[in-house]
Amino acid sequence: MIRCLWVLVLMLAGVSMAEAGPLQVKSESLTVDHAKNRAQFFGAVHLTRDDFELRCDRLVAFYKNRAGGELERAEAYGHVSMLQGKKHGSSNKAEYHQIKGILILIGDAKVADPEGTIRGEKIIHNIQTTETKVQQGVAGERVHLTFEAEEDNTGSPGEGKLP
Image (cartoon, rainbow, N blue to C red; front, side, top):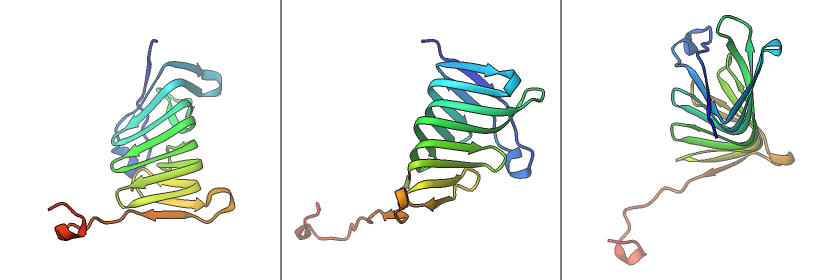
């Protein structure tokens, strides 16, 4: 299948995002509706910007109608996953807000890093600061956080650890 590459060199106005690199989107197909300032990417969608990655089945990008365009926001659907540094996450749907520099994972959302895993119905990940917040728990439940156990390398061979 022919892979479609649409490079969006869309920068934010603002100090923190002004230094960000170009946002790139790769997919199997692309449909652009200039009248609605919307682009839809289908099939194995892969969005990247600097150290941030987002993957999904379908991505709808909404942009301002300026020379070259300027991304305002995007909505990701189906098998949504994100990766930034040591943080990785997944959800049913996601909203990427370019101006705020945030990704909102929605529906069975999860974000993990070496220190632990958080789960909730809605998780907000700040791409600029890499801070992650859980807004609400899954289906009326409380927010869930699991801390990974630290390995104890001081044990003796008699304690079931290899010398």
